[in-house]
Image (cartoon, rainbow, N blue to C red; front, side, top):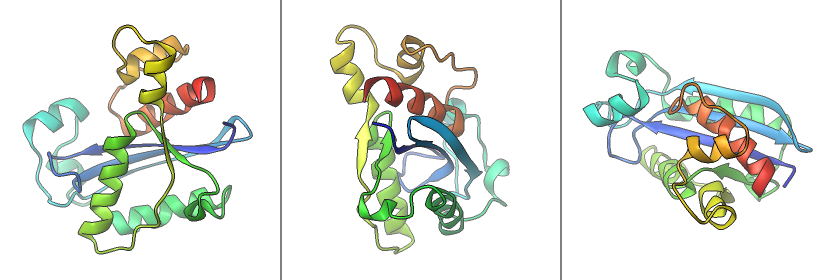
Length: 171
C-alpha cells in the first residue's frame, strides 16, 4: 500500500469520545509527505489517572485546546492537499489497533452530532499478528521489528509515525 493516512488518538478517560490528541501521518507514493498533530479538548472533559499515566496528558494541557470539530476540519484540510476524496474511500486510514481509533473517531462524531463519512480503515495490529505470529504485538515492539525506535510512545504523532513505518512494510 503506497497511499494512506496513519492515525492515532489518545483519550482522556475511558469514554471513546474523549479524544484529547490526534496524530496523522500522510503517506503518498510510499513516502511520508506530511503530518498533523493537535491537542483536543476532550468530551467529556475530565481525565482519568490511568489514561494520564499512559499518555502524559492532563486537564490543564487540553482545557484551552480546540474542540474536536475544529481540529478535525484542520486535519482533513491538510489531508485534502494530498487526497481530496478521502471521504469517498480514495485512501484508507491506517491504525495500530484500528478497533480503538476507528471507534474513537465514530464516537466523537456522534458526540458532536456530525455525520460520519464511513472512512475506510486498515489495521497494522491485525496484520502484524499474521506476519509475526509469536510474541507480543504492541506498537513499540512491532515498530522495532520494522527498524523504528520509538522515543515517546503514546504521543499521538509518534504513534501515528510508527504506524506509518509499519504499514509501509507489512500492508
